[in-house]
Length: 162
Length: 121
Ligand SMILES: [Zn+2]
Image (cartoon, rainbow over all chains, first blue to last red; front, top):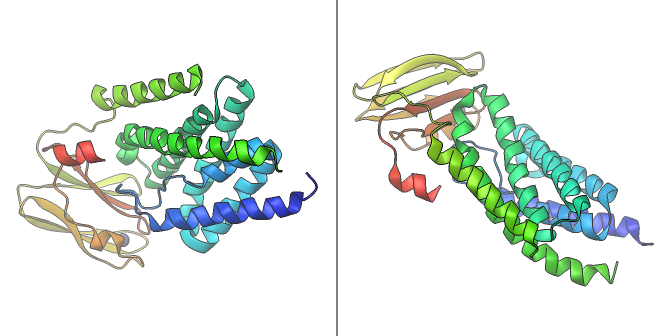
């Protein structure tokens, strides 16, 4: 992988683009700042075609830049917690070698949302938002599944080229 | 798809379903009440059966909560984003209005569940 820097750039740019798409999709929940987690698709791709370290950097870059561009300070904490938790879980799931991209992505989606709800609980100081946990788990499964299907097609294509 | 993919999806849905239907996460108080929290601390309980106005003072600014016709809403606030003011009135159990800049939450406890929202959410 000689053109590493270029790939970092492309992946980071794509994930920021996904961040923008997310920012304009309203999530019908009473907690402003919570997002779907579509940019996970880029982190997932980076995990498979670049490596764990590279995916981590791309994830961090994505969180900082999309916070600056679209989400602001509170959005940053939601985004950070979601990205960090889902990254760890996806790496563990991938290393376990028990499941395909889809299973890894579904776990990533679930923990992305659990990370966000954890921050919401800290910020709002009480269990006001705890009842959202099942809703966010199901939405994490759905988003994760969709992302996993997309990523499994993309990795097949990309692995021979990067 | 591998076997573990299916296991992950099924376990996640089962846990979510279990949490949802067990009622473990539900705040259960009889009678519809709009509870006002500032920074997580309960400040007032306003019955939805009685029209009232309640002014919340926080270290960041004020919010004015009004109960009218069985619904609660924030009609005015000096927060920068006005998300809370623009939020539609709430009346069903578990609905809430959040003012993040002021760390104010108005949540409905008890009362009726919005069966449509409960499914659509
Ligand atoms: Zn407000």
